[in-house]
Length: 132
Image (cartoon, rainbow, N blue to C red; front, top):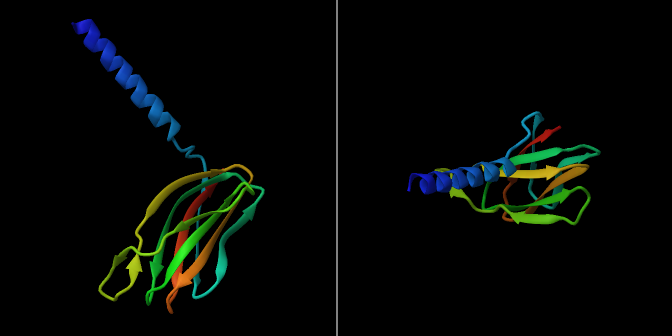
């Protein structure tokens, strides 16, 4: 009975530790923060090429009902768009997404754009990222 419990616990521990290993971050990176406000159109938050690293996370703020998409181009591949509009409203009527953790790994290039999606106010997004 003790042997079977020990075997089950060992298997569980092995599965738990290998799963955590796949989610590990290198940690040996040079941190950066980039931010950009837009009131219309699309603008680059990060336009960096010939580097490797990862996107750690994003946070966005919106004034006067504004909204935004973040457009990621990783290693020159097809773009991926995330709608980050909305969030929590504060006492001034401004919306904040709070911190959205990510771990987007890039090995050759990264480009992050903010695209204003509506409203008369400003969309302002901050991206935390790091280079290897």
